[in-house]
Amino acid sequence: MIVPMKKVSVVTLKTLQQDTLNALRDLGVLHVFADRVETDRGEHLREQSSAIERALATIPPLEGESAADSPVHGGPAIDQALQIAEQSQHLTDEQSQLQDEADRLTRDIERFEPWGGIDPQALQELSDADVDVALYEVLPDQAETLIEALPQAIVVDRTKSLVRVVGVAAASAELPTTPEPMTVPAQSMAEMRRRVDEIRTRRSEIDSELATLSPQRPVLLAAQGELASVFEFVRVQATMDSEKELTWITGFLPHHLVDEVREAGRRNGWGIVIRDPDPDEQVPTQIRNPKPVRIVQPVFDLLGTVPGYREIDISLPFLLFFIVFFAMIIGDGGYGSVLFLGTVAAMLRGRARGKRAGVGSILMLVLSLATVVWGAVTGNWFGYEPFSRLPVLRDLVIPAIAANNDASTQTIQYMTFVIGTIHLALAHLWNFVRGLRQRPFLAAFEQLGWLMMVLGLYYLVLELVLGSVSMSIVPRPSWWLNIVIVGFAFVIVFGQQQEGQNFFVGVGKGVANLITTALDGISAFSDIISYIRLFAVGLATLAIANAFNSMAAGISDSLGGVPGAVIAALILFLGHTLNLAMGALSVIVHGVRLNMLEFSQHLGMEWTGVEYAPFKTRS
Image (tube, rainbow, N blue to C red; front, side, top):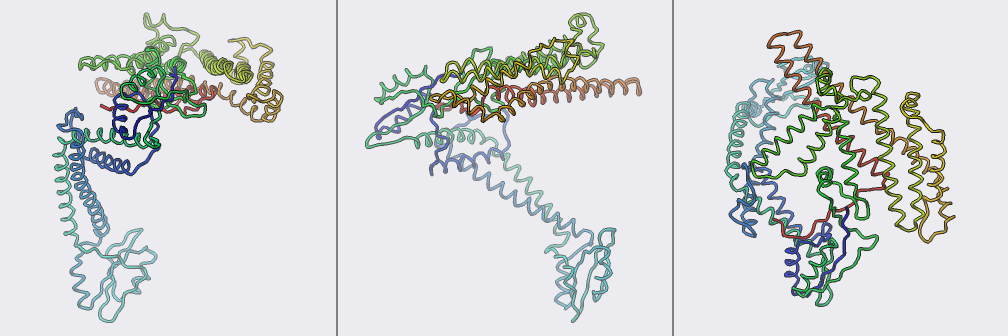
């Protein structure tokens, strides 16, 4: 559920501005849109924070470190951290310069090594004696022309792709400038190699010096938290408006926290103005759900998605369908068992350390159990058919959807289309109910039209994808095309109705959008078909598992004995681990997509929300 918000303005005296902000921060309930506010001090704080972040990225971490380990906090922590950051930056700058120099020297060594020992000092002595020496690298078909043009030529090396020639000119003779001679390095090969060794040694010393700063990381972490708090304070302060002796700050808070602000206002002598947000105003979103539904929140956190304040909280349907999608995509009871046992083990380890199980762990338990159930009814255990014939397990298999039953292919495809149709129909039914409470309520009947179109197009999908096979699964009514036509008419008639507008004007606008509506209908048709990915990805997971099982069996038979068993076990472990990882990735790519794209599009959601994050003291 998206919590209703109130817009609140807190009015105080200019002389009490600092105290008021401190009190509001301690109260920790007011969301202020300060993310777009820029100030000179804020820029300075950002630079300091960046310096500390660079130091944290450079200095090796300590095990189990935290900001609480720091002996200093507040302003002193920031000052000390900036000194550490400056020292770290000096070392990393030196290291970067040394690395650049080492790279340049290494390139020169690799380039001039085929020439043998080049001594720049000897070349300079020859030049002082009026003897010029130049080094040329040319293509084989250019070598003879160059040699003929040189007063004296020495071929040092000849390969299929390159010829290296030394040109020598004494007295008044001149060396050609085309092709351009190579630039001789300022150091000899021995000197360059010695310098590379010196750089390597110095870089190791720098690594050691950075490691000595590791005990100071808690100071950096503490300062980072302090800077974040100060930065937030400065930006919130910059949002305040003033007039004469008064100043005020405006923000948003959940409706059930209004009394807390009123009470704080009475204690501090503030003026409080409370009102509903304007219809076109950006409002932060806070979602509060029952504990069983709250377990889906880690998925939204991973995706970084927040519904807009005036959109819908889809947590419950997202969770229910996501469980089904996860189970069908992973599709293997053995994999589900591994995930379940791994999650239980992680929870027990955490409990031994005094940590409570998080909602993410509970979600994984639910998802893995659903996968075990789906694997059990389809008889799929690590892609190995004999497992499904074991006592107890064979009694759980539903033959119509069994993995070893070729006829189950059409049945499971049919199931995916049913799931897709229910999913999309739910979106339009939900919109229809919501629309009846809005003005004009006639516009809600557009959603009823889309609902009819989705239900009718479902039968068209069965006809085109499953063909005559679908008739043996579900009889197709003769009126399916009529319901599509009626639904299309509803969309045309009611889709453009607006408050204060003549009904027939809305109908005219709907007719004008006829082509767009038809294209949207085609999109709805393809959306239903897209749910077949649940079958396709699950089938791919099963096929890969079978492939690794066959590979392991072949290796075991061909090698025999202990070596064959060991290699086969290794193949099984690596193969099934890879397959499970690919399945997890498929859940993100496909399972989440069906909720976040197909379902959300039919709901009309844009996920443009900003999460409610009150201005408060950060620990």
